[in-house]
Image (cartoon, rainbow, N blue to C red):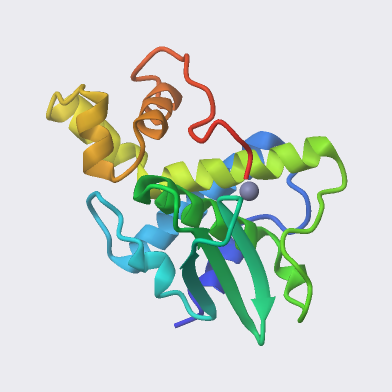
Length: 193
Ligand SMILES: [Zn+2]
């Protein structure tokens, strides 16, 4: 079977997306395929789906001042996560950073630091938004959220957040995106990473 990272990359258009919608749809497609390939059908999505990817090593460290750091060393991606952050944040960050890896195959050059500076502030913001879409789609797939909300009538944000292994804010924002709650929440981390 083809390396899942290669398969996921093939699901997104090469080069810059023509529109935010196109980028968002590609991220959602990639999230769906990642879950299917992992055989995960219910929450919470285990961190192992990232940790077990080939050529990717995930480490926690207490030495980071930011949520994560990515580098490509000896043919392997090294994803450092800030061990001081709560598990629900680290889970979000792992998925978010994986999307950066998927989007920038051209930086797989020894010694080059991820993430390359996006050409413009706007492009940087767009890349961050797409990475967040991917993270939300992997951790809180639409059909799973809708099933709990509509079929099982679970409307407690905190309880849903617990089911999905995400922060309250991330859950709340996902419910807003899926138009199950009125929009009002800021970015789940409050910052761009
Ligand atoms: Zn990012």
